[in-house]
Image 1: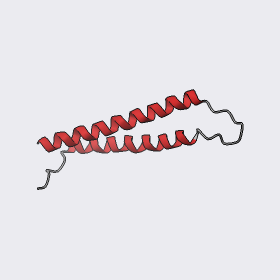
Image 2 (image 1 turned 120 degrees about the horizontal axis):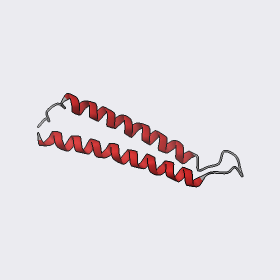
Image 3 (image 1 turned 180 degrees about the vertical axis):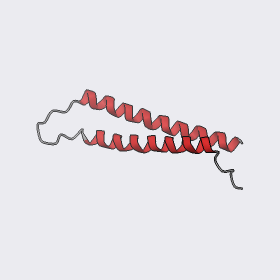
Length: 77
């Protein structure tokens, strides 16, 4: 039927994870837009850009893992 409400610490962790997920997704979108130079012939530092995209992807995965962990833990209780 219905699951029990989230405990206060879990709720704060969910909020924190969702903030990280949202911020990282927004940042990823911003970094990906940088792959198109603002003007023809403008230099793009693809090595730095790649590192930024990797970091964003890592942060998204981390936030998703936190949410899965909390959800799984709550279902077991």
